[in-house]
Amino acid sequence: MTQNTTNPQRKAVIYTRISEDRDGGQLGVGRQEEACRKLASDLGWVVVGVKVDDDKTAYGRNGMRAKRPAYAELLDMLAERRADAVLVWHTDRLYRQARDLEPLIDVVERTGSVVRPVTHGELDLASASGRMVARILASVSTHEIEHGRERMKAKHKEKRQAGHFPGGIRGFGHKPLKKRAPGAPPQVPQTDPREAALIERAAQDVLAYAADPSTGRSLGAICRDWNERKIRTPRGKEWGIPSLRVMLTGARLAGLIEHTDPETKQAEIVGPASWEPLLDMETWQAVRQVLRDPSRNTYTNRPADRQIKYLGTGLYRCPKCSEVIRAGGAHKGEGQRYRCTAGHVTQYAEPIDYVVERVVIARLTRPDARAAFSAPEKSAPAGLSMEKLNASHAALNARLEGLVEAFADDDESDPVEFRKASRTLRTRIAEIEQQITDAVTAAASAREPGPLDEVDMPELVRRHEADPDDALAWWRETLSLDSRRKILATLAVVTLQPGRRGRRPAGAPEFDPESVRIHWVRTDGTEV
Image (tube, rainbow, N blue to C red; front, side):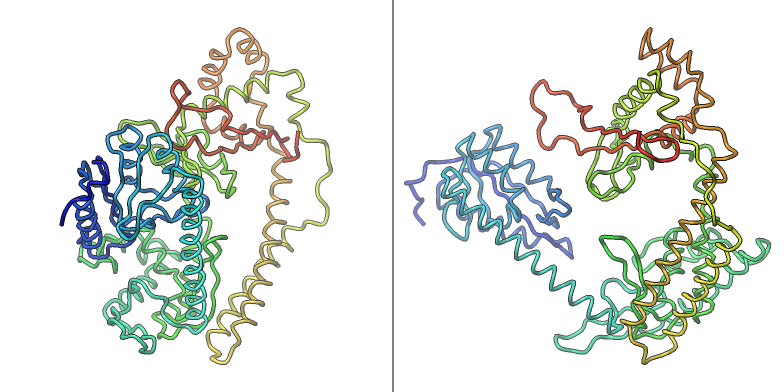
């Protein structure tokens, strides 16, 4: 074919993407690249690079952009003028949402680059009308994805209510399902006798060990035994305590459907499943109760080498989802970071801790510090009998367990009525637990010293007036990390705003102190 001489020769970078590559063969992105190279030949353009995001979605959630390394490299090539054209199969390979389109528009406006999809003509991002069309296409693409997710959610909800297998990888104890033909009825997972026997033995060992550690086996011992015998998870991996605990406490073993709400992270039993239970209800409930017992949590009694090492772990909060932020995600050769569990916030830990402690010290050295952070005098809460509260808590839990058991045994039970009754009981249990917490807190605060009692305030004030950095060094040397965390948890609520997106402007600091928000409270939780 004769080259198109009306187009000036450009340095083109090819971008290909596919959301899901199940076999890892990259056939989808390969076909896209082939079509783009043919178009480059027709246009007389020189291909100077190929950027591939294989098995990467372009749809970001929770207000965040999807992580696509190759797309970021593509924008860098255009910004640095190493390329002045983009070849792509279709615009939805480049962007699915407006938040991904805007950086591309910015680069095109500054560099005069062009975008040429294979499936239609040049994408005009240099004019207001062209940008309007591009943004409309992005909105349409976003709508298609969101509409598809709504249909998928409705489909999964229907399957859960009918007790059908939700799909995905098989559960341990069940045989793999065969590929279902279109229009065929839903398949029912069949019991794997060998794995079912292992589950039964593990459940009995857990219960025996809980009653008497000299008998039965711990979760760790069961994992070691299974791994030595080459017994693997359904994903082909070795067993660990977390994966074993999740498997043994899953409602699937009792022949029930359980669903975890992705927004609230709360799990609830929807109703009976279509498959046979692998454990009887009484055994499963006993195992679940043992493995979910809060007293088993060794987080606060962990060995010294596993103690919390960063000030804000579990204390700092994300402003978007209000979840606590934890340390994690450090890359090799870089400092530790604080990360929100939902991915909203990622910031380096050291400068944040420095700012927070400097501000805390400055606030504590003010003359009104003790008066401001002391809890107002108040009488002990009335009407809180721990004996009655504990009895009510036990009775409500027994009613909830009985409700679950009755629902599982009655094939004609109404799932809607079950969820309504279950939700009522859970709400009441949560209220009782809050009353117990309030009573324990009130009793503890009456006999325990305040968080500032171990601080030599005159010395802190003297050092801070002379040199704030010396005061910080003294603060850290004098008080343990645990003590400093208790003071911070008692006196303030710290939220971390997301850091700057994209490239940092020349001369701008790597850390923005304004991203740290501190809200002061008294020792009783009331605002200062």
